[in-house]
Length: 444
Image (cartoon, rainbow, N blue to C red; front, side):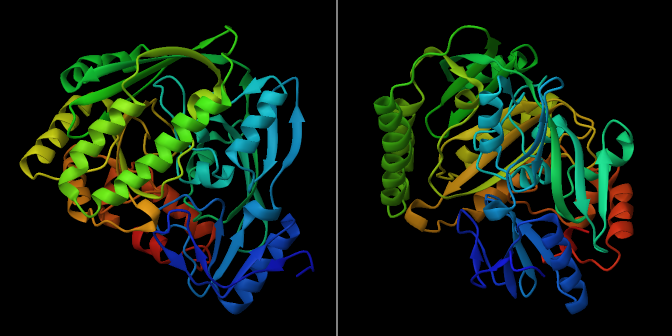
């Protein structure tokens, strides 16, 4: 291997602190050749190889105990090529969504959709099915044209949506099981601003607003348990000029109130859980109750600074079951008297042709629940998560790959029509399981 690879401490913890892995070595490759050399070294020493980006996944998908861990976001990131005429952008796999979005803005382009957080690497985002909310606007992987993957034998395999759609759809949401993604080509769109309207609803009004998911350009709900209050967030593309952002207001509302003050309240209520409903009411009133209309650039419109560590479970359910699932969640909260953190996030996506996309073949509603870790303190919400998981399973919910799930491999296989085809491709490209850690072995 070349001298360009830095070997770091043999211990790595993900962003939320939900797990720590102890690989034999951690590498920071600078080039595609470095990655190939690492895979070859791993093959010679019979080591598992896993890649990490920002570490935002709270599942064990990136764990590499006694194996090799590739940190792609430190040195293997950046723009490779941009075609102004087609708006097609090629980047290294460790490039963050934030970098891509900022480059797009600088070149009068945009990403069609984004989630709330953009620190993830592009490879991690597409491998786990990262999505936004808008039933006519696809997940991040649906904007991808080509991916190149370095496979177990050190060769580079290119998957191109335009020339072999079927194979591309098997590979684009890959969970890191096919190899190490090297480069990604993204289809950007013309730049746009977004006019955002927020409204304050009660639970029954949220249920009545569900059909708007099919007519709004972008839409989501943030439901605060124990308050009966919901923020309805609707946005559409506009040519209107973006409002000027006050740095002071941003710091006061998004950083101080939305993160520090909320985290302090979460820490205090970790000792007095019966005060959680009071905290939720206070934070909803402070952060989400204001009815407002603003215009923002696409990046600021989609994203929020989320600094409090957290454990999340989010499943995609067929969109037609949204009302039933939300009502069952409310019933469980009332009957079992779970005292839980806000918000419960409700988002909508179009169907996706990627074999392992959570929205494969179905317009979907993603419902995410959260357990915060204030100042790093673990709070046990396993019973709550399991109760909600049991609701999702009734409606064939598919778990977000970067988050918590309780499914067995048999249950997962039954949820995906092309599961066997993906497994066959995995076995073809990686017959010795070079990229299969314990998490992926449990799944496959």
